[in-house]
Image (cartoon, rainbow, N blue to C red):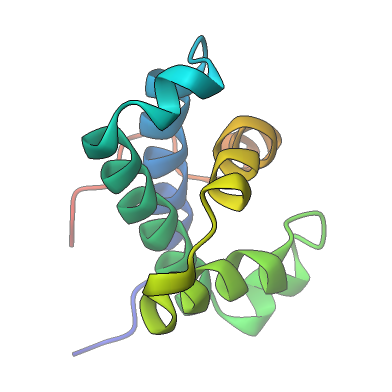
Length: 118
């Protein structure tokens, strides 16, 4: 399997951010707490962002120093390897506060079209 171009991973990250923002833009913390399926979906989308970020080349990371690579991949590791201790407070903070600025940054570097899943 050949390594994909970084633009594919930036596109996947942006797509996941947009899905998160679309579901959380006007969501209250009480609504978040009351919707288990939404929380499960958000965990998955945050994991997708982390997995795509993990695959971005060192050159791609260096060219985009404003993206918090370590924090993004760290959250992915936490979800995958320590899934029983993922804090809902932390996840809420990520989806409500961290995703919007990340989405803005990614919109500047991701390809204009949506990722095609390759």
